Amino acid sequence: MRGNYPDWLVQCDLHEGYDITKKWKARLRVRIEAKAKDGVGLNFGVYDQQDKKGLYSKKIEISEFDGNNYTVIETPYFTLGHKMYLWFSPPDRPLDEVEKVFIDRVILLREE
Image 1 (cartoon, rainbow, N blue to C red):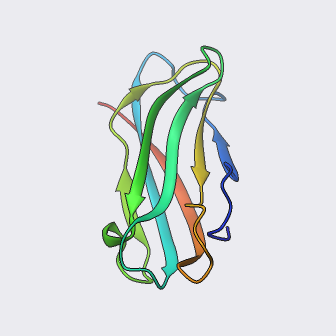
Image 2: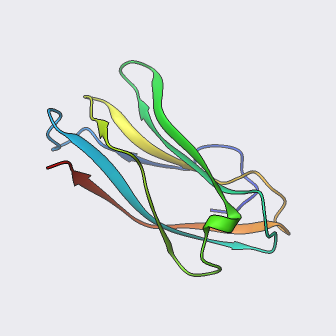
């Protein structure tokens, strides 16, 4: 994703095939290409379509990323509903600050 967009550009549905009686957390593998050294590099969260509310969201600071390497970020555990998704949004910054945002993978881990 280019860093200058303000909208949710990637969504991952979470309602098909997951046990909604268990709690889950998401482990994300992401990276950014940025010239800026501080400020927001990526926004993401968990949204419940059925209840029309966000369950979790986070603004990830550029300082939390490992340079141009992929960085692993985890959400806290949350309860899945019937119509939920993870969303990702670039930081809506000028391209000379945050050029690109990459989402390599999303892994859901069930609480034991």
